[in-house]
Every structure is written in structure tokens, then in C-alpha cells.
Length: 393
Image 1 (cartoon, rainbow, N blue to C red):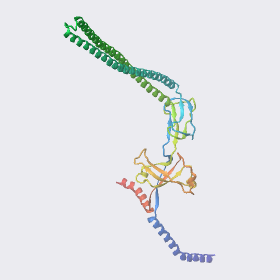
Image 2: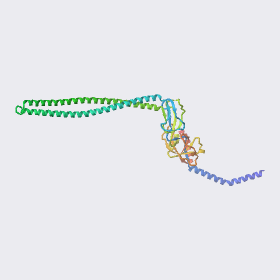
Image 3: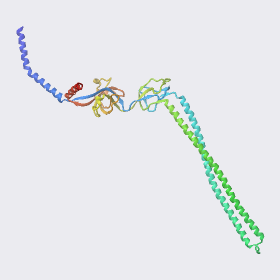
Image 4: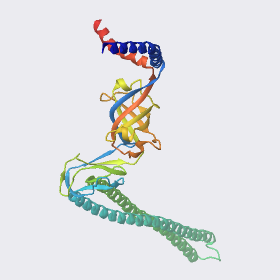
């Protein structure tokens, strides 16, 4: 058995000696290729966070009770479409409604009283205008009568004066002169009486005008008082109406009820109790929270990214391509907010089978740069040695 075994060893040695150059050549080629890739190849560096979710452009609006009270009606349904201002929950508002109706009745009575006062004021103003116009006409007429009486008296006096020059002659007797003077005196008395009557009428008209103007002033004061009361009542009505409306929990925006609480008729809500969340309609976006060391100075607008959705294995469904649209400049609660816009998936991509909707959680990876593997090794080595060197100092 020793001879065959020795021959086998010599055969193997001969074969190994013949294959060494080929093996060495292949190994050298592989090593060269690896060194080239290590020094000049490019690999993508990703900034990664698992704190990401899909949201709509408009933030979801929580709906809370503005006041405490007992529920008399509820219109909540998970996923139901609602419009802005729609009543979702109504609290008991009987007391506020009764106070509102009472004040509305008071306001209506004040409105009727104010309308009557304004009508009476308009009539009084009309009477003042009419009295003023008729008084002016009466004054003009009386002045005409006074002028006529003065002319008649002046004529009678002139006649008596001329007859006095002729008395004693054959043409005129003393009796005729006396008659002429008596007629002149009578005419003058009549003119004076007309003038006195004019003055008396003027006093009477001024008195009547003063009474009417005083009534107008009184009505104006009453109108102002009632108008103030109407304004006060309107303010009270508005306040009570607002109190009634606060007992109605309304949808703040148009959208879909993404979350609702179990609220039954008769339940008592406290002020601030959250009853629902309205998700508005709008385009979807991805919101991610990065630690500052991953995002600041590295994540920038326009960089490409991808979203891996929780619950949808990326090996089967693929990833959602996205692009960075906004990066916060300040750190809040220890993280940096980054917003991304999802891009349409390729026609054959598995991610297209995932219906994106508000609230889907996942992980985001942002391509921040492309470097060689050697650079990554040097960075890792520097990061490992950095703390040691600082400690040594």
C-alpha cells in the first residue's frame, strides 16, 4: 500500500506546482479589483431614522369640548366625511336658549318702540316745518295789511291837512274839516291796531313754534335713549347666541374623522375633553424626526430618499421614493424635523400596491452623499480614535 500512496503524493505535488501561477494570478486580479473599488468606488451614505410617518399637508385638527355639559346629540362616525362648521356633538343648552329667547323678545319690543318714536319724531319735524312755512306766509300777509292800513291813514291825514288850508273859505265848512280829521284819526288807529295785531300774532306763532321744537327735542332724546337700549340688547343677544353656539362642538375643517371617542347621549363631557380628530383633505407628505448629528449639515432640500413602511415588508412591497422638501434649522425636543414629498413609484414597483394614507408610520433613509469605501473606513477609524485621543489629553 506504501507504493501507491507515495505515487499519489507525488502526483498531487506535481498538480499543485502547475496550478500555482494561475491561482496567484486570479488572486492578484481580485485583490487589484478590490483595491480599486476600495479606493475609487462610490457608495451611498444614508441618514436614517425610524421616527417617520405619512401626513396630509394640512395638520390633523383635534376636536375638543369648549364647555362642560351633558351630551344631547352626537354625530360621530369613524371615517365619516364632515364639512367645516358641521355639528358633531351638541351639549344641553336649554338655560342659555331660554335666556336668548327672552332677550330677543325684549329686543323686538324695543325695536317696535323705537320705530314708533321715530315716526312721531318725523311727524313733529313735519309740523315744525309746516308751522314755520305758514308763519312766514302769515307774517307776509299781516305786513301787507299793515302797509295798506298805513297808506289809508296817510291818505286820510294828507286830506285833512289840505282841507285845513281851505277852512273859512266858501268852498269848505269847518264841519267838513272835522270830519276829515276824524277819518284820518280813525285810519291811523286802524293802522296801529293792525300793527299791534301783527306783533301779537308773531308772539303766538313763536310760542307755538317753541312748543313744537321742544317736543322735537324731547322725542330726539327718547329716540337716542331707546336706540342705546336696542344696541345693548343686541349685544346681549349676540353674547347669549355665542353661549348657545359654544354648546355645539363643530368640525373645524372639512375632512374625514380619523379618530373618534365613544360618546353616548347622556354622557357628561368636561371642558377640553377630546372627542374626535378631523383629517383634512390634501396632498400627502412624509414627516421625519432625525437626531441632530444625522440631519444638521447633512440633510438638504432636494436630496433623494426612500420610505420603508412599517407593516409592509420592503422585500415584498418595496420602498416609497421621496425627495426632501424642508429641513428645520432649529432642534426641538432633541430632534430635527424633516419634510419629504413622496414621488410616484415605478409602474412595476411593489410600493405602488401600498395605499398611502395619513398616519402610516415607517423609517426614512436620505441619501446624503456618495464616498469611497476607503473614506468610510478612515472616518470610522477617526471616530474610534477621536475619543481616545481626547481622553489622553
